Each structure stands twice: as structure tokens, then as C-alpha cells.
Length: 120
Image (tube, rainbow, N blue to C red; front, side):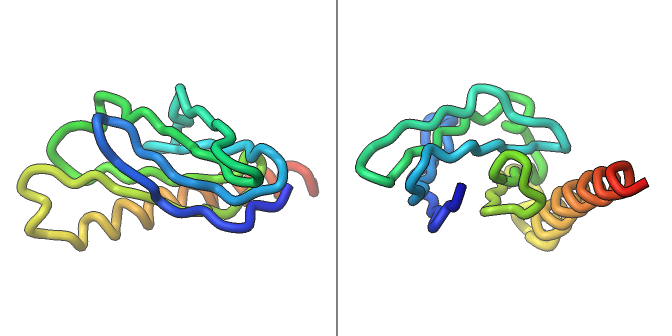
């Protein structure tokens, strides 16, 4: 399946939303701290345009930097990402970048492990 474009649409009331341009319904997964976020919904809003809604887990609504990686299921690349910053860390936005790098490193590790196990 080919996702042609993804862009953030809204982030309010604990729900992050994005619009995805795709001929077929995309199979989107969102990761937070290495685990898949549950409750992600995908609805067609127009021809070849889908709305992805991600409920933010309550544990992510706390002081610190909380990064989410948005992927197509089975793919090893991140389509987009978003972060929630709260508390003292706002003065230190480098932490947000580090958190995102850690999330992407976790994705790379999973892809590498899968590659090794399939080619052993």
C-alpha cells in the first residue's frame, strides 16, 4: 500500500489527528516508549483521504518529553512523529530531540533483529 502524504490535522482533547492520502485504507500503528498505542482509529473522510486518530495514553500526560512514532504496519520507516512536552523540560528542547532519537533507534533495533532472524 502506498501512503502518498501524511500531515498533522489537530491535537486537542487528548486526541492527535492526522490526514493520510492513500488509495487504500492505511494500516497505521503508533509507538510510544516501544509499545504500540491502542485505540488508533482510521476513517475515510474523502476519496483517498483518511483521518487517523490517536488517543494519548494517560501515562504520557505528565512532566517530561513523550515522543510518539507513526508508522505503516510492517514498515521499518517512521512516517511522522510528534512529542508532548510538559513541565521543566520546555526550557531544554534538546531533550525532545533525544527522546525522538531514542524512539527511532528502538525502531531500527527491531528492524535489524527481524532482518537477522529472517536471514540466519
